[in-house]
Length: 608
Ligand code: HEC
Ligand code: HEC
Image (tube, rainbow, N blue to C red; front, side, top):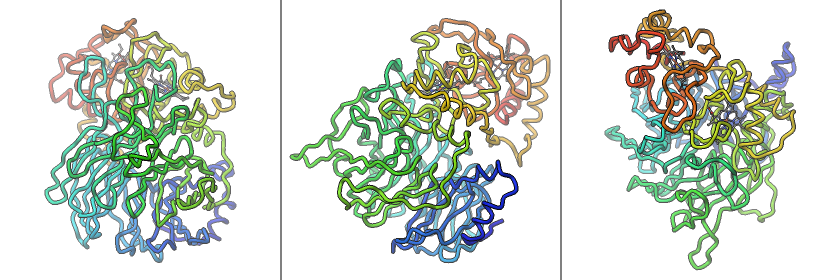
């Protein structure tokens, strides 16, 4: 149900809550925003409050709040500025179409699992919505009674953009979708999906090898270029240091839209200062300037667009990433970095010379004037009361915070986006050198000791503290580690996209019987409810590069989103693990299962 509340009642609601603990967690969590062309109104998606706020400009006053049916992940204004379109994320997402002037709900359109990153055609007739966990895109005809179709993306599409001629939609996938073991020779990179608006035919092109954590995408006003924010990882190097992008570089890739080609991957870091976790990206109306928020280092990069299209200087460890140098003869300028007043800048909107930025953890918007003096300090618009951070919330912020890392190069989320996995292998040195391990999700870590594929850390507490000192190269107070523990302990699994109305499908129900069948034997090592016996076993998975036979049994909760599988990521699918890998044969008859029994078993495992 949508409920319109004016600000005054909302304040009463917040303060009048009966449950103090819950009240303490009532954060707004602004994540995305849109601005009217006349620069008079801002529309802000407050993720955690499940709400959209209207902000009057230039006063910066919240004038309306409208409750949403689920967490809003993004919003956009229709080209005629009459309606506001909000993606509300759930296993069955809703696209709320609101009257931009009154906030009234005009229409609800169903979409897939965790709708996000919508884009609209310039004629306002067609909407593209990323269904992140269905790995597809809803293409919605907005005319009354118009139909919707689904187009396949690759893995976790998170952002879409449409060219000004309306002919092409681009979709950025968040993660690579490949095996990652040392024998795999293909591209390990997320794909950029091009959708032909007329035929809905798709073409996928890879970002540079080792790219992960794709967040933002926009198309230049002339339609020539697209800009994609992400990281480039040196996952084949041993992470002995974090300096000069040794582990992760923070970049924007420049795409030639016509040729469907990446022409440059531009490092936004400086030699001695990383610009952790690039997130949102937007162009000024003249297309000359590209603005990128850094959710980890709490900054805005202001980049000269023409310089990005030219030749770059290779200055980082990764040969794939170049930097723009100051060169008066070539007319190139390096990015300008602006420190922001709030924490966790994500979505942004540009109108005229003003950049408005949603600061997720501060419940504020930052306002940067691109024409102001270089040393001008950005101003702040408060969307609500100043948030008092609970221990859990503080842990969430710290987990996303690259400013606690030596030289701000990365945060825990650089490799564990959304506290899950980057789908890459790393050669962490806690278990020797040369034996790469696939990054693990943070789900249930405190309940599933020991940690790491070889069980070299006895608890999540120990792993968190080791991460701070050995991966962020920082000496942080115990209180911060305790806050991160609290955040990780309270992570909740996301419902699998394989469930049907929250229930096991008929195939998954048959698979459950097989999983629980003693003859098949999965349950002996993966018992419910955690689906791990918390022990190490030799399941014949040692690789030629490995030093040990025994591996910690992983939980199977959320295995649907943690591919590739096994300690070295050698299987892309659970089916490959069971059929090629004959996984489980030590305890049961997995080798004797028929093709349809395997399909059912896989469906069950992917439903957890
Ligand atoms: C450079 C990438 C990278 C960064 C940055 C990183 N991790 Fe990890 N993390 C990994 C990899 C890879 C593994 C799995 C290693 C293994 O299995 O041996 C892992 C495993 C873990 C585990 C154990 C999970 C389990 O189920 O066994 C915890 C807990 C963890 N990381 C916490 C953190 C925290 C907290 C931070 C930030 C302080 C962090 N990580 C930063 C790559 C990273
Ligand atoms: C003898 C104990 C044992 C049995 C029996 C067993 N597993 Fe496993 N399972 C493991 C271990 C240990 C690993 C991790 C191995 C590695 O990383 O190399 C694992 C990994 C997995 C993974 C990959 C998870 C990930 O995050 O990479 C899946 C999926 C899985 N098992 C499902 C099953 C199914 C389905 C069955 C029954 C057919 C089964 N297992 C039987 C111990 C077992």
